[in-house]
Image 1: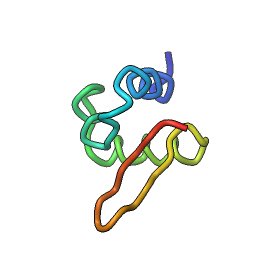
Image 2 (image 1 turned 30 degrees about the horizontal axis):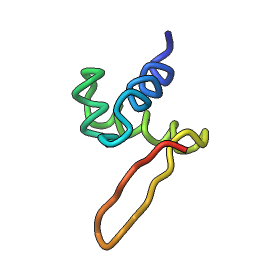
Image 3 (image 1 turned 60 degrees about the horizontal axis):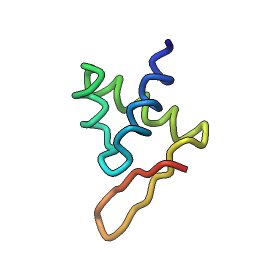
Length: 61
């Protein structure tokens, strides 16, 4: 299974706790790798990034 598939599976299991640090903890990644992974999920349309009053939230599409 590819890393992006694992990340998407984990996000579907826990849709209320999607964040870069969440991916870091669950997949045991460094921050820069988790950030690039989240960017890949956003670019492919699987994750939506919402910015509300200095708070960033991620949610499944």
